[in-house]
Length: 412
Image (cartoon, rainbow, N blue to C red):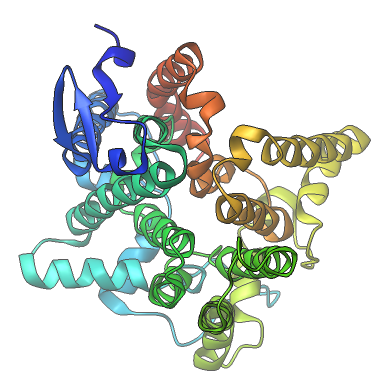
């Protein structure tokens, strides 16, 4: 029996998204989604644990090695030590600089919500940061999977919702759902903000969007998405108010949500400068991670991708960037993507614009693309047995490859 025969929506109408048929029996949607998530965590944990055992047995050097490492510290590699610092010591009150006065890497690059939640778990359970951080990540990874199903299924049906969730949970970088990083919390909050906008509960966007803004950079995609949807709904209403009503209370709620989440998204740089007394503390801290790739540079929006690619590939690098932009726009205009709704397309375009405008593409790029996972619900993918099977198989096969590359060769 193939996956096509196992996962079948109970009906094709909207109400069918609340139940999913498995091998002839019907189950609540959340039971099936959580089942998918648990199985995916078993698969990923198996890969990670196997490589951890091999690495420690063979004395391999891996990301953020520590004396007497255990599996939880292995799951808290890379920059998780900054989250630990924030959770246990708070943020530094001054910005560290080198002898030339250049800002060095420090904890102000990382936002506070994830370490605050981890600190709460530490206080309640008595656990150290790394196991507490893994617990937080796993729990919110499950929340992200649940919300992703609901938002995709609400527009594209249960089959698309379920397959988008499966591909999200089994993707090459799905280990981020269980490492001591803020990714899974960020996904849950971003997806919840998007879902609230899709069901037009605009006041509910505010708490999710504000919390996302203090979890990871990128939450400014939410107010930009709201702005796009506001304009679209306004134009639709002017064309036909009976078919596309846009009540005044909804307009007020959208504006309030957009302004509030935009202010929250811009607040952290101001907070960092106010606490440390260092103008541009956050921006200069972020730029300190760029030095290994492009040296000491000034930040100019919309240029980082060109800055990196031209440095290493000259004019061909610039052409590659243009090709990526054209490909991304082309993807967003596909009928199966547009069928996901104005909100999803506007959100994807907004988040893509954020990455292009401010992010220097390097090893972390693929991880930072994961908030675009609602696009996995496009029926061109989810309703093609061959396409979804290939994507799922490649995703699982690339998991150990990604772990080897990112833990042992090129740390993100």
